[in-house]
Image (tube, each protein chain N blue to C red):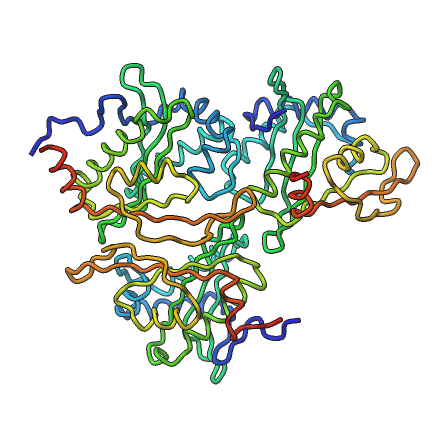
Length: 194
Length: 190
Length: 177
C-alpha cells in the first residue's frame, strides 16, 4: 500500500477545498461566458453574481457534510493556488458502488493545457482507490468534443446515446453517457506504469 | 379536443389523497421483488405515517417540475401503482418516466403498457415534450418488453451499474421521440 | 452592452436610485409610483440568492465600454408546455435612453429565449405613451398583436396598453437575412 503518494497533488495542478473569500468573484466571471455553462450543464445558462456563487458554495459544503455522497474539489494551480476549475464525484450509490463525475475549467485561456486531464487522473484514483467505487459515469453533450476526447483518453467508454436530448441554437444534439469500470482503470494504471 | 387525456383502455391516471397513497406505498415497500425491479438503491421500509408526511410536503411545493399520477384499473377502480414524469429539462423538452405496479397480481396483464401509453400521450400532447427517457434493469425482461411495445427504442446500457445478490447487472436506457410516438397507432388523439 | 448579474448591494443601490426618477417608473410599470430604500431592495435581492427557479431570468445590463450598470431586462412568466415567455426591460440611467442600448439588450435576450430556452414565442406589453420603446421593440422584430384600450390612467388621461409578440420562427428567419 502506498500512502506516501499525495492523492490531491498533480504536477501542474492540485485538488483543493473551496476558498469562500476568493473563489466567488472568479467563478462569477466564468458564468458570464455562456459557452462555459453550456458545456457543463443542461440547465439554461445564466450569469450569476459572486453572492449567488457564495451561497452555492455554502450549499455544496453543507450537502457534502450531510449526504456523504458528494465529493467536490476546486482545481488550483500548484504554486500560487490560482483557481482554474472544479471537479466533483456525485450521486454516489454505495450499495452498488457507483458514482458520477463532473468537471469544468472555467476560463477559456486555461483550457488545452492539460489541467483537466490531470485533475481527472487524480479524481479517478480517489474514486477507485480511496472510495472503492466500482464504476463511474459521466454525461456529455454531443457538441462538447473537448470533454468527449478528455474522457475517452481517460478510458471512458460510450454506453448510451440519448438521441436529441439537448436543444440549443435551434437544433438537437445527443446526450452521450460514458462509463469506466474499476477493472478497466486498473489495467490502464498498470500499463502506464510499465 | 380531448375527452380522455387521462384514460387508456385498461387503466386511468388519477391522484389519491396522501393517506391512501401512503398506505399503499408502505405496503408495496414490503415486497422486495417489487422494490428491486423498480429501484436500484438499497431497500428500506418506511411506515405509512412518514410516507404520508413526505407526500404532503411534496404537494405543498408543487411547482410543475414533476408530474406524478396514480394508476387505477377502469374495471374495478383498484389502485395498482404509479407512473411519473420527472427530471424535466423544459428548455430541451426532455423528461424521464418511471412506473411501478405495486399490486403484483396485476403484473403481466397489460396494465403497465396501457399506463405508459397514457402518460406518453400526456407528455407529447399536453406537455409538448420532445423526448422521454427511461431506465430499466437487465433483470426485468417483462418491463423491457412492455416498453418496447410502447415504442421505446434501446439507446444503450450502463454496464454493471447494479450489484444484487453478488452479481453485477446492466441498467438499460431507452428513449422515445415525439416523432416516433406519433407514428404509433395507439394514443393518437388528433 | 452585455448581460450579467450583480451582487445584492449593487442591485439595491441602482434599483432604489432609479425609482426616484418618476418618468422612468411611469414608462416601466402600471403600479403607482413608490420609492423604496436601498435596504429594502437589498433584503429582497438577498432573499432571492438561493432561489433555484429556472422559470424566471433577471439580467443586469452593463455597457461594454465602461461596464456601467444601466438597467435590467427580465424574461419570465414562462409557460413551458406552450413555450411562451414574457419580457420586460428598464433602463434606469436616463442618459442612456435613445442610444440603442435597449434594442441591443432586447436582441440578446431574444437570442437567449430562442436558442437557449428554446421558447416558441415571447410577448411583451408597452404603454402607448412610450413611443421610443415601441419603436425599439419593432426594430427588435416584435409584431403588434393588439391593444388593451384605455387601460392606464395618469395625469387625468387614459392611454392604451399595447401588446406585441415575436415567434421563434420569425426570429430565426430574421437572423438569416
